[in-house]
Length: 96
Image (cartoon, rainbow, N blue to C red; front, side, top):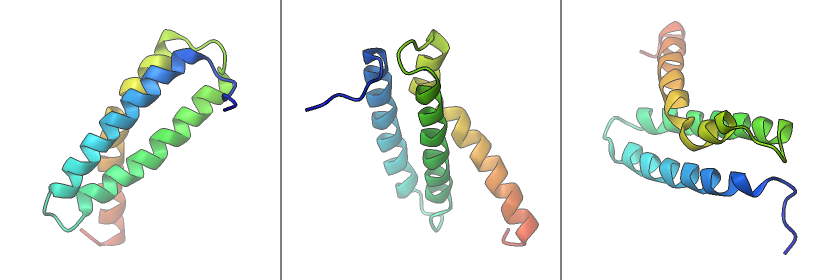
């Protein structure tokens, strides 16, 4: 199997981020709020992987320590930002 030409330093943070997102996604699906929290987690998921792809594209062979930590734990701040941004947008649209 041909390997993607990125540094092997990305392997562990990517798998840890996927595991974290699976756990948080399942917990979000268990909350009985009509799917609002799950929707926010889905928005954060797409945003996070878009940012991670840009980060890996810019530093494919020489990731800094910050790059690794952002991929590993960057989902938490993205969830917080997407929560407040989604609530604000829903408020502007009159949904909330």
